[in-house]
Amino acid sequence: MYKQLAARGTDAPWYQGWELTEQERATFRATTIASQQAKRRAASGDCSECKHPVYNPRLNPLDLMPQLVGNGLSALSLFSGGGGMDIGFDRAGFNHVASYEIMEGAASVLSAAHPEWAVYGGDSGDVRGVDWSKYRGKIDVLHGGPPCQPFSNAGRQNGASDVRDMIPEFVRAVLAIRPRAFVCENVSGLATKKFKNYIESTIIEPLKRQYVIRQFILNAADFGVPQARRRVLFVGFADQGEAAQFDIPTPTHRHYRSTGFPHNLPATMGVREALGLPDIGFDALSPTLRSGLTGPRHTTSVLSSVSALKQWNRLGVWPNGVAADRAAASAYVAKNGHFRLSLQDCLVLQGFPGDWPVERPVYFALGLIGNSVAPPMAYNLANSISRALHPATC
Image (cartoon, rainbow, N blue to C red; front, top):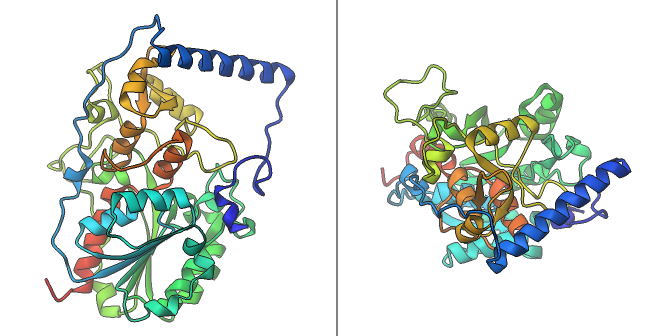
């Protein structure tokens, strides 16, 4: 069933169809047809609407995570997805041992970005079939973000009853490998009261005899990423002394949602500034980018809610129908005239390098981006862990 994570269509075990009236279906159908026709006109150059310029982003996410020299520590990645956690640990100086990712398309992106990395995809990336004992004594940090859908609103929050719940597999890997430290990441919904017993029975209880565990929430915007994106982290240390040396990463940037942060921190850019768009008198963080992999439908939208749509409208940015590249976005202006996003723009808003090799189909690329840990947030967490572990090279 886990292999159906990448399955599409109504045969997916978590699929729940929409109950639409005939009038609503007709409206959706008409909107889809009109959009397809406009897209064809744009692709052929026969488009009467004005094109918007191709803007150059002002934010380079790599500036938020300067490459550090090797720290003598090794890192193993599970549920690697688009590579957000892998990027952060790599740039913090960790030696990348391997990545395990069941989606072959995601594994291909990691291999293309870093041909020197050991990447296991498809059947070989299925964590359920791996004998982790081969890594015992060889891994300093084990990190991973098990599928978030069992705990997200978009994924129906079915928790342990969802076939996509792989947190027990992450715990199995920790117990078999016995790394010096581990990082388990997920959506902030996992930290709600609804899943308190789940956390205790599935994460804390099996690991508390071997690890000192900290649970906390980080927001990517606190680390310069122009997006409101909160995630829960579970960080465990096998050595009590090293656990005592660990500090939860403190913000490196401030933004309009910041509370109690030093005023001398650099400001996190808003969407328009980060993407190099003209000043319209308003700018703000991006709403959380939605992943197209949370359900069975192919979608090229990053819209997550009605309130998010209001924010996108204020920003003058169109969150639906993300284009494959900036040139295509320029040629296919949204009906309301708002700026159309491209995959490269979404990478910037998520804190990824702008040239990270996500590819078509667009819905899949967006799924990888929207499901990923924001790399600058992972980078700062990796640095905190590095300081706690006292590597020999320090």
